[in-house]
Length: 128
Image (cartoon, rainbow, N blue to C red; front, side):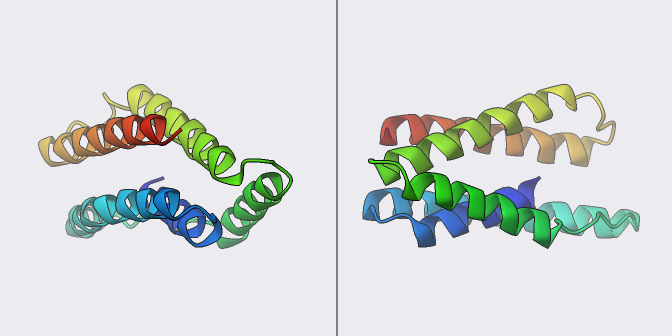
């Protein structure tokens, strides 16, 4: 989820014509990078490697988002709304899984991700 969200933000930053939206997307992706590194380190320490995001699925999703935005009068607003919907889905998933991380290290990382999603949601709403 985390790596996929970073990839989607980077793709959106490259695609969108609006400089302010592109900067916002890049900033959100950049803010998530350290958490992704911390999470990868914590997972490696347990010896439990997660699966990599499915590149084909991710590329397909990004293409659909681009097609939708191309046929929208206000491309930047459309992409902002797409990212806002994705943040809502992330927030729901994180809320559903909040008790599935018994280890205190994972709980702290989980809470950090929740905070990043909340901050991104607020920033995206302000960008609309």
